[in-house]
Length: 153
Image (cartoon, rainbow, N blue to C red; front, side, top):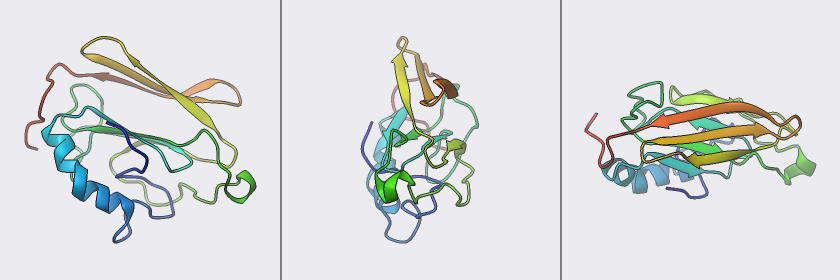
């Protein structure tokens, strides 16, 4: 699944956790649906940063890897650029890091992009590349053979 704003994020602007935030509304509207339908990966953006989440459902992290995930894995990639405050992006990732946060990257002018490869019916590969040196800064090798609804946590 994919859409613009994230359900979960570590950004300081509280887009995801302040009362009545977009993240709170998205969790209320879509989180059960994604879990019940067995959505393996949720691609999100909006935040001018990169953050990869462990499988998470209802703020619960059933595991800290990507092997046979028991809940959706969220990937937030809005790191391709920023036009806020002359590129400084005043939306730092200095807020508390949730248990669900596997990796996060934010510094002014640290831009990048991701690749997503569907390798076969059980393997999905995602990486994040930093643009200034073309270095892969994070990788997810997701392996899932049990397609369909997730089992209750």
